[in-house]
Amino acid sequence: MIPPARIGTYRIERLLGAGSFATVWLGFDPSLGARVAIKVLADNWSHDLRVRERFLDEGRLLWRLDHQRVVRVYALDELPDGRPYLVMLWADGGSLRDRLAAGPVPVDQGLALLGEIAAGVAVLHASGIVHRDLTPGNVLFRSRPAGGEQVMIADLGLAKAVAAASGLTARAGTPGYMAPEQDDPLAVVDTRADVYGLGRLGAVLLGTPGAGGFDTAIRLRDGVPEPVAGVLRRATARLPASRYPDAAAFAAALGRAAAARAPVGTIAARRRRRAVAFAGVLVAAVVSATASDSVGGQAPRDPGVAVDSTGRIRVALPAGWRATGSGWEGRWVGGAREPALVVTPAPDRWRSDPAVPAAFIGLSRELATRTTPAAFVAEQPHAECLAAPVRTSRQAGIDWVVALYTSCASGKAVIVETAGLAPGDAGLVYVQIAPPAGSGPAFVDTLLAGVRVR
Image (cartoon, rainbow, N blue to C red; front, side, top):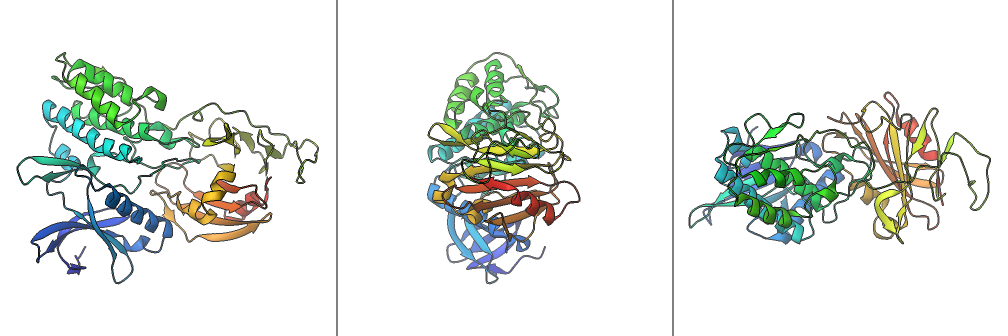
């Protein structure tokens, strides 16, 4: 990759790193004698509004935080070709990923480092932000003028001020570090997901080399106090309610455990697989029709139609499909979940088998008061997929915004994100589809045409 001569007022010295969505360059300001990191949106994503907005959101969040434990942003600007870039503090000490690649860190350093990382994440949590992608590559080091190093949290590209992920494969994070609920349709992703990431970082920092997988027990090294194993075990519990509530609570527990002098313990394996149940208790879906297209009317029982438990959503089922679940986990109005359904030909396998198609249909009056269908679809990016141009489709009286993702690296191979405003005040309708293999836009449009809400 040939480096540009300049970006803005900065002379470019070398490439610091490149990912799927951005490239980071080392820039030098000769007037100040200062070096900075300049993160530029990748050219192949420059016209994708969803990815562009996520990139800009990262800059806004970092600017607002302005804390020494979080990588700082100095400026946000655009290249002549329109691509945005962030001018950020340069972490001259590299990343935790670099250091782990050189070999395991000493136990005392690992314990202290994990506490520093937790303190940085606690800054995010205190500001109402969930990182959602805590990995060794997102932990950076910067030399302090007075000596020593400052540990900093970086890469808030997946962070959310109100982090709620729902849908069939709304993955947001890195396998091996992301919490189980980040793979769970309809689940709320909150500060406890970051606690899980901290626990996984602890297992990598303090575990024996090569024993960090989910399918084998993770044995901590000699010299790690026994109570630390309990802290990591609780932090990586499969159920969010069983973990520490946030990074501050995790840091406090780690500090108490690290003060002990007992020998090493072990923590049980954390298997990385798709969750097999919805988060929370969901009422079983009513598969037979109980209402007609006209409000308050009655219709004969129809095995080809699924109706949610409130009667507000009716979906014409593709041949051989059935409904499962009722209620949109994480979306509450008046003490009850807003209506939702999942339809699939295999209710017992659609979460775990990438080949099984499925669709999630949710209806929210609250969302309709604060966002638009286009904006809501833009908030559902899939970093491991290729994005096609957004299209619109008018079906059953609703103007749908439809975003197609293909060639996904994991989970469902194809994902369709779509939303529209229902007639009247019914609300915003969100449909996420993992279509059958080989199907095209006609399948999506037919499914949308069979959605009725009131």
